[in-house]
Every structure is written in C-alpha cells, then in structure tokens.
Amino acid sequence: MNSDWRVLPLAAFAAVPAVHAMEYLSIEAAQRAAFPDATAFVPLSVDLPADARARLAEIARPPGARDPRAWRAMAGAKTLGTFYVDAVIGKQEYIDYALAVDPAGRVLRLEVLVYRETHGWEIRNDRWRSQFAGKTAQDPVAINADIANISGATLSSRHVSDGVRRLLAIDAILRTR
Image 1 (cartoon, rainbow, N blue to C red):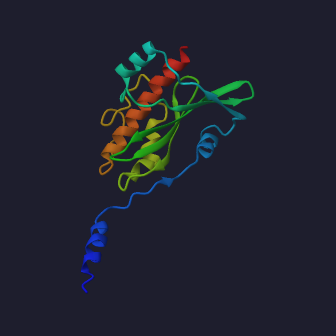
Image 2: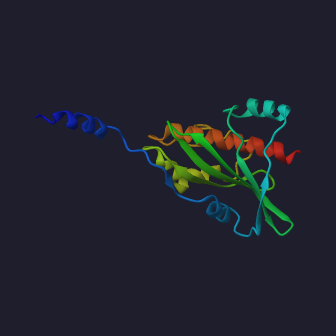
Image 3: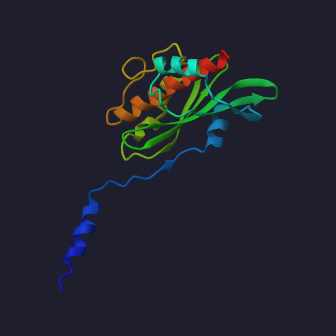
C-alpha cells in the first residue's frame, strides 16, 4: 500500500509562515515604564459623543476603529498623564500597542505590547518608536511626513502611526471635556 498521500498534505504546510503572538510587555509593565512615579492607574471612559466621533473621523483613521482602553496615571491627587492601549492591523494581524501622553497632550512613550506578524517586528526598535516622543494632536504623525518608514515594515509602520494620530486626537477631545 502506498502512503504517499500523507506526505502531500504535510508538505503543503511547510510553505505557510508560522504566525505567533509575541508578548513583549504586559499592560501593567508598560504603565510602570511610562509613569514610574504613578501610585494609581484610574480607568477612564473613552465613550465619545456623536459630534466628537464625527470630528475624530475627520482627523484620524480608521474612523470605525474600536475605542481604546485608557487610564489616568496618578501620583496621589496629581495627574501625571493618560495611558492608552489600542490595537491596529499590521499586514494581516493585530498589533497591540500602548501610548503614554502627558497632561499637555504630548507623547511620552510608545510601546509595542504584542506583535503577531511574521515581518515588520522592527517597529519595536527604540529608535523608530522614539520618533513619537513629544508629538501632539497638532503634528502630522504620518509616515514620510514626520515619522520615518521602515522598509519591510511599511504597513506596520503606517498603521501604528495612524493609530497614534487617532489616540492623540482622542486625547485632545478628552482633555476639552
């Protein structure tokens, strides 16, 4: 009896790249790295009214994205900033990332929490992520404008940049409420 039929299905899987989630930081570790002096992280509602959502859709894409999770970083009664956790699609899989913003709306830190793609992991590079420090909702926060692209990670670079721009727009809206 010929058992070659078993080899073909197994060989077909050899060409499929393995995709696995690599967790680099937990939310709690990223919060502590961004706000080492914080004594508490207080959950914050990001439930925006319809007019704010309309403004957000004009400023940042994707307009239909889900709301991020957010916390106020506190040191006693003093607000140190806001910490956001969001996800954007890379090429095919989600990239979970965190953004720390100071009370004036400037980026303090960007962290990649979970990366699931087979390519483009270079967005975790400190040098690339450091480009976001100091950015505000008034900055373009766009590839080839004020953020450099990474060859081989173009979609991840673009989508994380779009996500940061969206979070900065949300932060600006929340600070005016």
